[in-house]
Length: 178
Image (cartoon, rainbow, N blue to C red; front, side, top):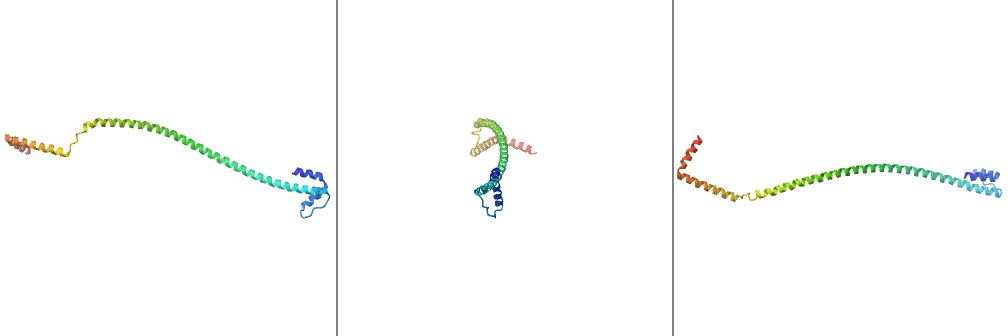
């Protein structure tokens, strides 16, 4: 823009000088001149307006670009931090997977060993069952056996008393007491 303005100044020469002084004091009405000075006035006015708009737009774009670069840099940094933390988390999870795999293997071998021991114990119990079955005597059976034993002892005592052994037993029990 500045180059275009310089080229116009060279082309229009003195008439442009009058125009510049009149445009600088925006309150004064433009001087009337020839067609050449009117064209210069219009062109320079448009060029000044365009230059100001261009500078304003360029400043806005520069500012926007700086903000975009800053936002981009912050995003890149944030992504780097996020990536690093996720990679650390991945390493931790991989380590945990390895640890759990070893634990699973150990638990499988422990289960296999415990299952073998359980099978052995159950096998032994099955061998013992025939020896234990029928051994449980009910109360009625025990009572009948005791009564039969008491009856047998009474019969034996009666037999002994008939044979005179009872005197012998009394003497013997009296000797024990002394």
